[in-house]
Image (cartoon, rainbow, N blue to C red; front, side, top):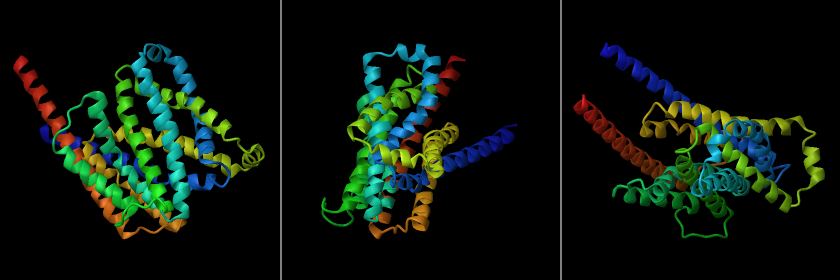
Length: 328
């Protein structure tokens, strides 16, 4: 019986890894479609239009689950605003700007690879915001990840902000920080609300800010109207809304619930792998030696940190089991 259970558990874990890899691979297709939309819209407009479509999901959920979010306190709402304005709005804009700058300076791959720094920021902010304990071993690996991010952004030279690639890298790091922080803030809010409600709050609360930023940018109404006359533009926006924003996350979280963080980190390599392949085939982007070196340092640091998290989870599980056996 135990053998059957072990085989079943292993099969379930393998399937979960494929779910994670598929979800991460869908993110890797993102850059190609965003860059196509930038022929018609600004970065702010792209993110705004995506959230207008996402409101079709958010508004019904917020109405149906209003008892959950109406009970939130002031501190919870500050966390919601960080997730919505920081993670859903500003981070998405920074990522779009990073891609726009990166395509002109052969740095699109840099923008993608730097997103692997997100877990490092998330662990640091979890200690500050949620009071989660950070082991001493975190700090050396944080330094390794920071060094890798530096090499990815600036190469083997002193920082120079006269290069467009440096600005692309800084935009990517800003997005990674805000997305990593959104994970922590979202976890805080989800002590009070369900995941569907948190997702709806994220998209819904971001929309007013994005509409204001779009109007402040004085959009070219004629160009926007012309763009929406093309079926390819509408299809692209629908893809951006449904696949990277909703479908990929649903697929990813389905797998993440069943595997260790360190295994998930391995499966998430499908994201940069897909992104690099797409960029090489369609955008003619090259991967430089510094980018390989920087990415290797970042990935090793993230993998080591995820193994530490797995060890902590395993220890807590063993304590709970021991307590249960003692009680029995």
